[in-house]
Length: 469
Image 1 (cartoon, rainbow, N blue to C red):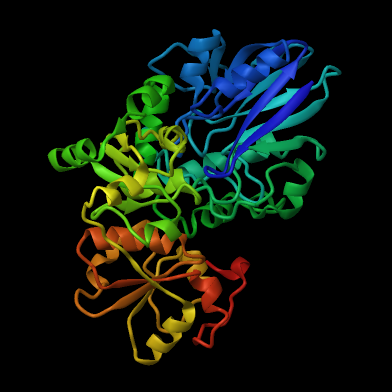
Image 2 (image 1 turned 135 degrees about the horizontal axis):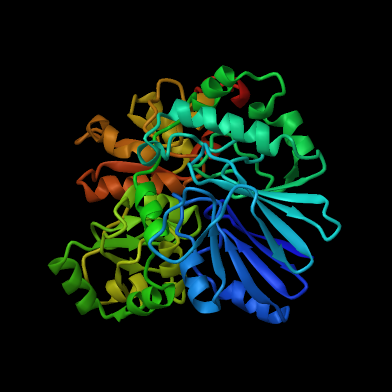
């Protein structure tokens, strides 16, 4: 028996490859499926099942394409309804994979069809549970995403999640391995651990939501407390996962179109295409196409695209590092953004060499910011609310990048103002968006809060994250 966690840091997502005696199961595959097929061929094995823990909201799964290419059966938990052929399992249904078995545990709460998959070894011993978004390490799945589909409130869904955890998950032996669908950085939970593999016993000791003496009322209150609104692209990804989608091979083929400077400019002027620049922020600030938006490949690229662009049908023109065109299209497709019209051949250098108009972004060190603050220059913190609550510059407001649209009126239109994040990635994203909206008086703080902490700029006292509500 082989179990391999295939973890994608950009999405904070774990897919799983399980092989036993020549038969393979894939759990929650990514959109690009060739790596799974190639791995099975290398093992001399056949992909038999594709287990989906639920209809994912934060990424588009590769289940449909993988089934088409391999003939494997897609398996969902009870109550799931799809527009493509899939096996809707019953609670407790057992699937044989080589010398092992996988049992369906219906665990509603995060969504109604949510299922965890219990793997038993060839001796029939409970070995591992693939818990999807039902149980994370350090947290549990948020219960507010499926309210409309389930016709239930988030409190009612949280109550179902409480029951699922206590009747299906916490009853497992302490040495059973927990393989969750996500780790730290995912928007599917609040306090996810950086660890991506654990045990039932460890979670009973450390996970706030699994306290043995916890009442349902306490669980509902604690799980729903402090939930931020989900990104607006989530329902669109759920729709694609339910209804199906275009093959990623076709998406790459249509999107990987090299455009000359002339053609690129013509399409930009004649359509409502968004120019997305994915180079490193240090390159972007030195020069970029006016009105383009920066979201660099080097950060948590796909989730930020989803959170900020929102509409998966939005036409996109790409400015990428040379050689990264297909990678960019692939990573966009992971969150359902399939409408890439092409990329600038020769990248930004070609645009500049053609003598086209160029914009730049002012960026200064934290020491320069320290001098500006003494003159009462406005500063804005675009980190997440939890980061801000933990520690921030005194008298500086929280204007998180996720909700930048809600704060646009707070930014000065004439006087210079500064933006910072934790390390310099998100502040450049924010600056590019504001620049595209006409705020040319914006200044980025290079190095972000990490650099600010090395100065004498007044800051609030650090608050332990575990005490934050």
